[in-house]
Length: 168
Image 1: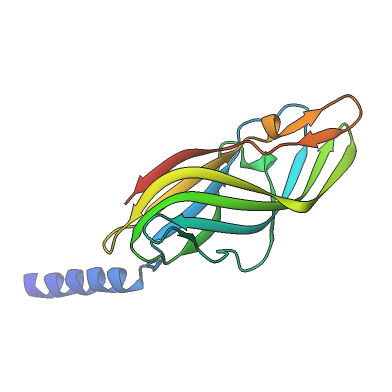
Image 2: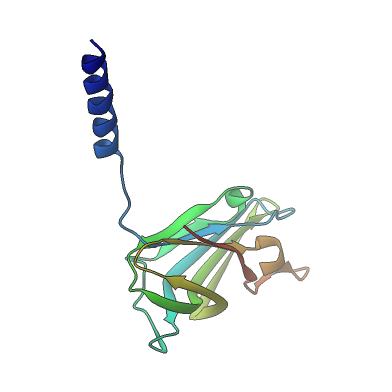
């Protein structure tokens, strides 16, 4: 009888392990936001994201498959995944975001800022991709510091820092 229970327990364990979803990505990029005051929404259009390979002294291809519109305000206290991908092993020394449009909703009005040419924000950060582990990078895009009211309109100057880098 003990053997039957043991066989059932092992079968159950193997079934659980075989059904567990496993990501093949060794790099994940997340975005969060610090609180913003008197602003209801900040929609930012990211056209591209690049990573700097320190080993090759080059930037990767765009890791976004298409432009992404993100509302920064709901990201207070939570993170949103921007990308998950398999990177070649090596050391990376920066992240570059390309922003083409911003819509700010405040005071019951929408302020649209078309950015042409798009603004490129380079964020220095260092992380190493290995064959055995994964890296999670979280950027903090501070909407309150990025959107400045001058009395007539909003000006946009992106303020983005690395919140954390976790090697798993």
